Image (cartoon, rainbow over all chains, first blue to last red; front, side, top):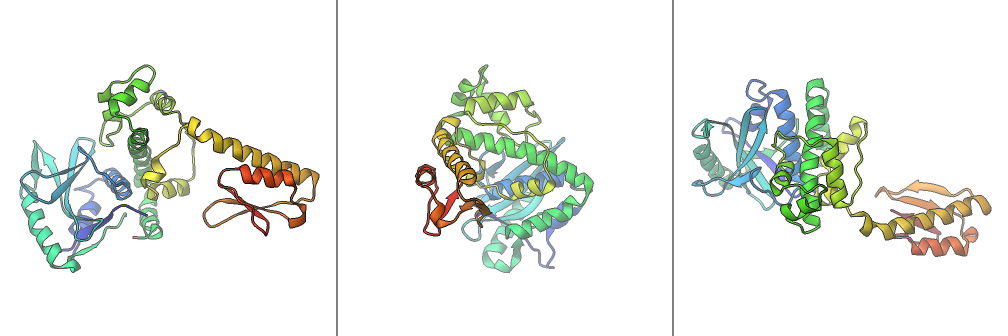
Length: 130
Length: 190
């Protein structure tokens, strides 16, 4: 049995920005997607997540980032532990450039989406490992 | 998400050869990094303490890098053998079908990562050998055939006729780790 269940945020139009991003080869090359999915699978089975792979985001309470490096790109998946126990909701995909988020608003978007998910459980769906 | 669904998702992507090759690579290094940490913590050692066990000694920083799945530093076979020796565990490097890769990729719990040291495992190894030895004698000398079945937990079940079970085999079965003899009689060995 897995320690964590990954969930993806669903926007107001019913689309899945996490899955769309993962399947967009310009944003995430196929080899990077393989690494991201494999690490998510590993984290799903792991009780404790530690830095630098996963850490709380300073100044954005409740937001956790999962850092996955492939070649010279640092992918930063923002999410939170919830809405239920043993759930982790992926909220915003982003990358790091010059120590900054791209998009720069990724953390604040994550905060907004976390609130939406907490108040409406229909805005999440189980993450798929395509 | 069920294991079957996760596997089905992965198979869809694995049909793409580029994804397949990349997943194969990431599966190796992700597993190694997480497993190294799991094995070290199983022994209640810090990274520095574990580094002291490696011959020749490995710095704490190097252990930290090896435990980081994002590290660009990839361990060589020789490094893996040194780590295995320090943990007193085996290292198996072999080609396998993708079904095996798939199965191991979705079984990622701590239990799946931890490995018992040879010293700790030795009593159960010896008990299993004693049990198998008794069964071999039984196969040859008495009534045979012994049915070798597998239960739904993956354990091997040795099933043999009741009145043919010798005292020797019963004693060995009782001594084998996790082995039981039932009135069927039926012995289960893991």
